[in-house]
Length: 532
Image (cartoon, rainbow, N blue to C red; front, side):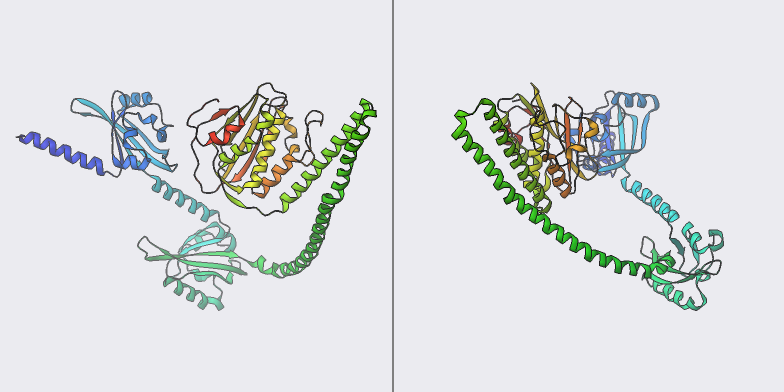
């Protein structure tokens, strides 16, 4: 049977364990020699989002939330020297991407025959947020052009910002402790008393337009909002008023009304002009579709007839001329088709859906199998997030950009084309397509997105010069951006962005492939980098 000393020890250990398990601060117990985690309490692994099993045996620096903390060895040396390590405000990122601020304190102490390190981690996120909010509010009040005035329930002024000084002419020392009635014209004293009475009852008075008197006796038009100030228990402890000088607005009201009348007339006229322009554009589109295509078909048809009927009697030079005519007519047809498609992109309605971008990329790359099967191209595909966009138009973007990459790496014995997602913090998903092709002068980066803007001759690389204009127009319609970077003979990178929506992202590894036909199958199954 355990003796009194052993029972006391067990009771102490049990008490400590209960405190450890129920503590509202995070606690880590580390080996003093290695700095590796021996124990972690529930609060911490719930705060960070890591299972306890993933934390045991690691050093603090090996846990991703603490990746920016000093090295394990440096921390151990500081602990050996000073006996403690403290961080007042340590920013952490949890496993699910939340950002928290903690106070981190480490101490070395003796536990029986062993020395251990205890790290206490206190979540101060809400406190920091409250402090930041308080500082921001104070800065907003002081820097506001509006008069922001605090007063007690009797109308005695308790705070007076610079905006109030500018509008009413009194400085804070003149008004603190004075009655708000100093600003009220004699014939409006009852009006202010009614406002004070409403606010005492917990009501707010919003955007009330009235007159107030400045220090030099002028009457000015103001719009005032008065609201009750309550303590944490909901008890009224005063009120605040926000006053804006609207004298200029009142004076300008009639002028604005007149301008609006003129503007409405201009809108009517402009609408009629736009309608006429749209009708002309529709007529042009019809003309391109029918009047231009018919003669082109005739040209190509008669070239074929001439070649069949008189080909044997023509010289090689003449036959070459016929082929040149046929190619030029075919190119003209391509230009007409591209122009029509470009026009339709600007008028068709977007059909946005959630799109698995990896699947769409794989599907698109599969279209290039035939034209690339004789080439040595390494495709490097990074993880691609889902996006919300018009699937058909986004596919057109990918086709144009990938076609460019395939075309302009045609002179490379070992072509490399990379597709991935670039880091961005502007609430948008940024996709890039990079190649090691002929590139372009970076000074001409904006020019490549213009209609018929070509940086290389037709003899060097075929094309109509409309593909990248398609890209920019489609991405503009999605509310995104399209841009490019290049180096002469050093490759090019084309970027486009799509505004983000709430959707999950995947976490596949990078992948290198040399055969586009297997992309659609492979993108959803890869687990580690590989080259096929």
